[in-house]
Every structure is written in C-alpha cells, then in structure tokens.
Image (cartoon, rainbow, N blue to C red; front, side, top):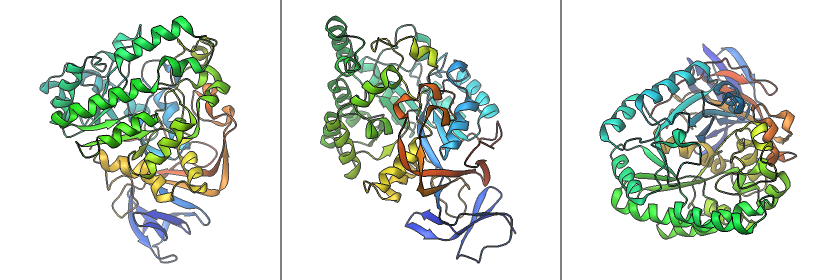
Length: 457
C-alpha cells in the first residue's frame, strides 16, 4: 500500500508529458502506473485537468538569514518558495558576516534546518583561498561556491569579506583553486574598474531620480568585459564555471564566442526575460536590481540565447528588502538597495512563456529545474519524477491565471514587489508537495517550520 497516489494528471517525465498515476511511499516516488492501476493509498490527490511537475529547484536565492530579519526570514522566504512550486532553494553566501568560513557555514546550516519549509543547499564563499578551507566546505556539503568580481558595497565589507575579488589575479586564484573541488563556481561578473568609471560619470551628469540613470551608470560593457575575462581565465583554470544573471546582448555574444573553450554554463532571470528598463521606470527604485534590467533588444537576445542553448538556466536571484529601505531611496537610483523578490513568479512566468509558444513545457522545466539538478549533482533525486526520486511536485493548472498583486504574495517582501504588480501569467500553482507532503494547498502554506532538509551533492 502506498502512502499517496496522484491520479488523473499529465505528468512531466524526461521524455515529455504522460498520463500516468504516481505513487509515493516513504517520501519517494515508488511507481508510475497506467491510470487506474495504482496501488491503494492512504491519501489520493485527484489531479485531473492538471499538470504534475517535479518540484522546482532554484539555484540562485538570497535571504541573508539570520541577519536582516526585517527583509525576510528563512521561514518567510521558504514559505514563499512553497507557494511558488519551488521545493529546493540554494542560498547564496551573502550574510552578515559573510559565509566564508566553515564555522559560519555550520551556523547557517543549523539556522536553515531549524526554520526552512522546503529543502535547501548552501553556497560557500572561498574565503582565504586555501585548500584547507575549501576541503572543509566540501566535507560540510557545500552545494557550490560563489564569488563576485566587484568590490564590497560601501558599508557592507563584512558581508563580502572572502566573497568579493575585484582583482583579476585573485579571480584566477579562486577559479584555479575551486576547479579542484568539482563543484560549480558561480560568478557575479561585472568589471570593478568600469563600474567605478561609469559611476563617476553618471553621478556627475545624470539625474539620480531617473530610473534610466541606473543603466547608464552600470552599462552592459561592465558585464560583457568581466565575463570575457573570466572565460579566458577559465581556459587555463579549468573550473566548472557558471555565469550568474546574464542581462545583455553583448554578453550573449561573448558566451557564444567562447563556446567549447572550457566547462561553463550561464543563467538569466525572469526580471530580464519579462521586463525592460521601461518597467523599472514605472515601478521606481523598488525594481532596481544588479545588474540592471536592460532594453528590449537585450531581452530579445536573452530569449534567442535560450532558444539556441547558450543560456541553459533560469533562476530567480530572489533578493528581498524591507519597504523602509527601498522607500528611503525614492528619488535616488544611485543609492537605492538592489534586489527584488521573485520566488513566487518564476514558475508562473515560465508557464506563461509556454502558453506564448516561446518554450515547450519540458524546455521551461529544464531551464528552471532539471538542468540545475544535473549541474549541481542532485539528479535523479531532484528534477525528475522517476521511481526513486524525491516526491517533490508542483501541481499546476495551465488553464488558470496567476494575477500578481502586492497583497497576494507570501514573501515578507511583498510590499516591494512593484516590478510584478499587476502581471497576469497563464498558469497557476495549485499544490506543492515536498517528499509527498502538501506544503502549499493553493491558498495557504501548510508545510511545517523546519520541515525542509539539508541537500548536498
């Protein structure tokens, strides 16, 4: 007898959609059955007219906990993940202090384990760039490593100590060291020197209240130059390099030029695929993110890069801030904090792209789930619904809409989600299951605090 059977739905399997019933035992998928032939079960979920997807794996997520609870907590933001059909998140190492020592890493792991509603993995910052430190992170199960090619923002040195490497020699040392770990090395890639150059010009010549000043102070060349240098260095370093949040047509051209030269992948985010700088102008400082949201030309280039396989991942870069922090910078784009919540709009946005004909359902799911599970060493436990996989699922209704309003979101940062206010996406998350347990029932989060598991490669 199974613990649970999901019946009547169209289930996304590696070969595509299939009308099968899914049985779950002990938190794992125990069988795929011709409709009507599943074993008896303690619980049956009727998914008729619905699509059953493997739970989404978001490989780029920020909550910064336990610091800054006014922005959101592990509990609040993993509850939001559950509401968005996301069953596994990978938390970035920006914290206060930075997650750059094994001791801080262990404290964060314990904190997340106490409060997370969904499964979680943790990034490490390479810290002192020694093999001893990296080996300890590996022993602790770090899902991957992260570095910035930019300096620490003013006043936030302790959050970036051991994470920010603006000098190229340190970037190369990090790539070379981390190549030996076999784990992905995710890089926020912008040129420190060019950022400083354009920021000086912008602050002297531009109106800080104009949303367009952000793009002019942080233009696409800052990103494309940094990515080109990293890819050139990686030809020697040999790291498993992953370029975070690609935003521009220029950077897409660079990625194509370096295709095949080393082991690298790239991601973009819904804010770049579904918004342009005109949307930022409408939403104000609440929609400021780094790197900036660009032009329609850049947006089109990102979609083309997805179509031809240059970009193989779509992630949220979910980064909540308190409303007071954003509101204090209204009228000053230069100094406004960068970040926007996005964990609840990832899957509806990708389902809308399917409805538009931009992607097949399998392509959309690969981009925001299965490709990440494979890259980070979690497949087939995550990212599939084959027997033996974790019974993590998002049951969606492709015929219903998700209408985003600030009050409708679960994230603690709902009051600063202006970028998504009023959006209508075709596709709605009706139920989320973690290890066969419902953690979102379509109207409320039902998963328990601390119910998420620590995930290692």
